[in-house]
Image 1 (spheres, rainbow, N blue to C red):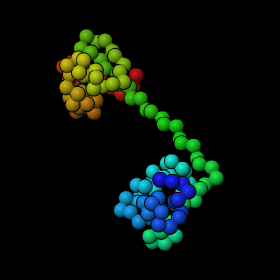
Image 2 (image 1 turned 90 degrees about the vertical axis):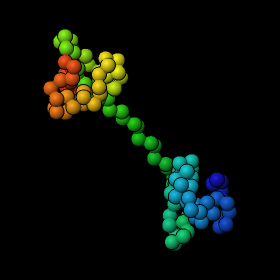
Image 3 (image 1 turned 180 degrees about the vertical axis):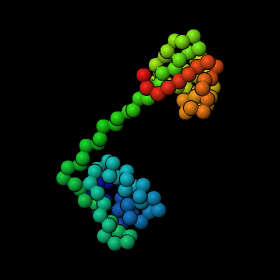
Amino acid sequence: MKKEDVNKKNSSTWTKINDNSKSKHYKRLFIEEYGGEFVQMSRHHCVWEESPKTPEPKPVVKIIKKWTITQPNGKKDVITNLSKYCKEHKLDDGAIYRVLNGERNHHKGYRIRRGD
């Protein structure tokens, strides 16, 4: 899609943005590439306006969950990947989640709690 053609009536870009069943998809792609916004002029017609400054994307904050698992021998492990830990120790992850949620006291002697 061409930035120059977006507001030219009956151009291929204008048609994709205004007269296409996938116009929402094309509008999103266009805005991702060029910024700005579309202003609705009528029910079936919109105009693209270039914004003077495109806001910077917000940084993605990844929340890392930690669990403390107590093994049957009393050793404590702090982990961040519960599924991987369950596979390595041949545990049923569903049963471990039931221990975590308080539905069971232990699974094969393993106890778990949130945090470190």
